[in-house]
Image 1: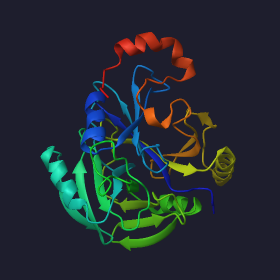
Image 2: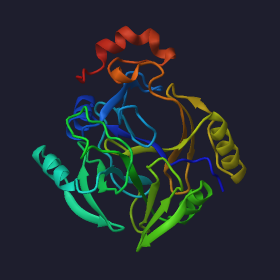
Image 3: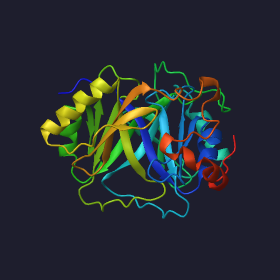
Image 4: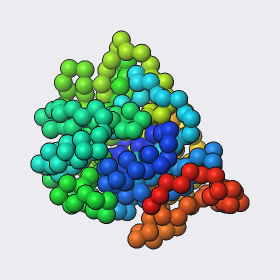
Length: 310
């Protein structure tokens, strides 16, 4: 069993409109845009990052907004709901805030005894807020949400799978422990994690497979401290039979990827070097930052990428 995984690192999804996406996360949810860069493989498409003040691992939601992308279709083989943690007693505030901004899909719920508010993003993305007692992480207060209510980071992510058994075994191999079960829903927790410690598996044997598009999660990333720990994880996964990519430099972290038995794309990302490697913390997310291999395209990209505002 691996001991290097520290919880979630980031979740990356697909969107249809960069300006709308930026507004939803920075205005409606009050998160900080911590990086404005481009897709490594398609540099005419943004890669936008949102999170807490520093972009701490376990707080970062990222998006590829592809203009004219088709809408995603929900199903199994994907992360269905990305869940953010908020302070205890704050869901009433969030229900009023989201309703005032006409956010779709507002629904009160309870999951494993925790008060939960379900809602939808601008591309019908599946999200929820959960009150989490004793969460010592600090939320970003520069986005119009005060410290008593600000999002602390991820609480969990929920995967929809036809058969959750093999993925459950994978999570256990990665260091997670099954801590609760309710019907077709199983919860796994990483001990002594970074606060974004939980992953849920919903088993839906009769459901159809998802089709990726706007609103779909592209991949989910798990955090390790550094490159040495990442190489240990990579070797262990490959020794177990997983096909794992070589280490890829993503400028703000190093990444490896592999496909799970249930079809979800997993990434293992390092906590180093962080989002302040090319911008100081006070100005994260302000300038367009380009991977060095795309720097020669700067003039063209600055002219053609959709303006998204501050």
